[in-house]
Structure formats: C-alpha cells, structure tokens
Amino acid sequence: MRKITVAVDGFSSTGKSTIAKQLAKALGYIYVDTGAMYRAVTFYAMNHGFVSDERFDELAVVKSLPKIQLKFVLSGEAGQSDITLNGENVERKIRTLEVSRQVSKIATIKAVRDKLVAMQQQMGKEKGIVMDGRDIGTVVFPDAELKIFMTASAAARAQRRYKELLDRGDKVTYGEVLKNVEERDAIDSNRKVSPLRKADDAIVFDNSDMGLEEQFERIHNFALRVINQ
Ligand code: DC
Image (cartoon, rainbow, N blue to C red; front, side):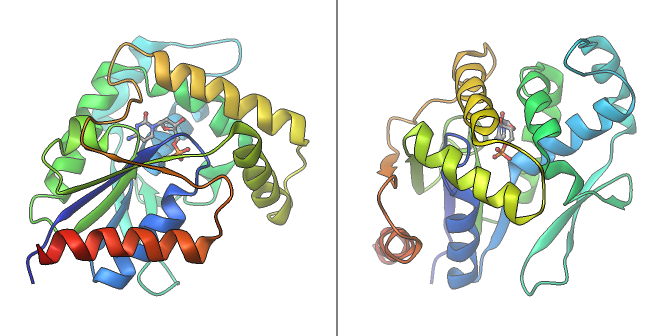
C-alpha cells in the first residue's frame, strides 16, 4: 500500500492531536505533534526569563536556538511519544496554561519557525506520517496527499480544554481558558509569518457537535480513500 502524508491543521483545542494520533495508529504511521515543539521552545524561553506576561526578548530566544535540542522519544503508552528538551522529558510541563499563554508569541518568531519547520520536513521525508499543527498543509508539507482543517466553536473548544486541565488537577476557570483560546486564535491567525489559514485543498472538518468515534471514522475513511486511489 502506498504511504501518504496527512496534514492536520486548525484552531487550538479542536481535538487535532486526538484524531491525528488515532489515525496514525490505525494506519501504522508516525504521529508528530508540532505544537509540542513550539511549546517546548516556549518552556525553555520562559525558564530563561526571555518571555513572560511582561517581557518578550525575541533576540535572546533567537540567539539560544542552537542550544535547544528537541527529540521525540517513545513514551510508556504504546505507540505514543513524548517530547524531550535537552534530554529532559517535558511532555507534561509544556501543557500548562502558563505555557499556552506565551506560546503564540514564540510562534511568531521567524527563526523559530524556520528551525522547527526544517525538523518537521526531515521527519516526514519518508511519508507515512500524520502531523498536526497550524501550517502543516500550507508550509511544511504543501504537497501532502490529505489535508484536514479542523474547526469548532470557541466555546466548544474552551470547554474541552477546561475539562482536560481540570482532569489533570490544574486550578483554572472556564473564563480564563476561553480567553486564552480566543487570544491564541487571534494571534495565530494574524501573525505575519505562516499565519493559521486553511490550505486551498484542505477538507474543512467542523467537529463542534461530533463525538470522537464519528470523527475518527470519517477521517479514517478520507485517508483510506486517498491511499487506495
Ligand atoms: O497545538 P497546540 O495548541 O499545542 O500549539 C501550541 C501553539 O503553537 C499554538 O498556539 C500555535 C503554535 N503552533 C504553530 O504556530 N504552528 C504549528 N505548526 C503548531 C503550533
């Protein structure tokens, strides 16, 4: 069976990673969460005092890029991988609301994007990959055979993210999460470098009112159709 590249882009908290992971598993493909890469760089920048609510030292982030080593390693869960930053597994530490609040700023830096996009293209060289992010179908793999653009209402997305954070024991309010979702939408869509936009040939997939099973079934079918054509 021929191997394809699947690009899953869309707004934050649309469930891209859940679907992308399931799809990769079903097809026996590699799954790459590119948001984790931007989050890990952000985590590094926060720890070094380069970015916070009050401060954003873009030059310092760019200068430290050569010192930032990212790798995906197999995690305890079958078929899943965790991201490491300079050898430390930061998978959990990058999923906080604090990191979410700073990540869009880091993702506007061209040098950061250039470095991460080059890594992503390298990972997908052999195809057989499902990659999720914001610019996968437009910039990283413009020739991907299947492109999905996931969307859902801001309220539905904030509710999902809020539940996720509560489940892990984080103390946040729904209002804070909704505000973060809306702010990230605005920054991600309006930044100069690789703004979030649908590729012309992407399939728009609105899952505001769709359960996981139905989403997976539909997207799996799209993939099988492309693979077998
Ligand atoms: O998918 P996520 O919410 O974990 O992504 C975190 C942030 O990273 C998101 O607000 C925008 C940025 N991002 C990006 O600019 N390009 C990507 N390919 C993936 C994520």
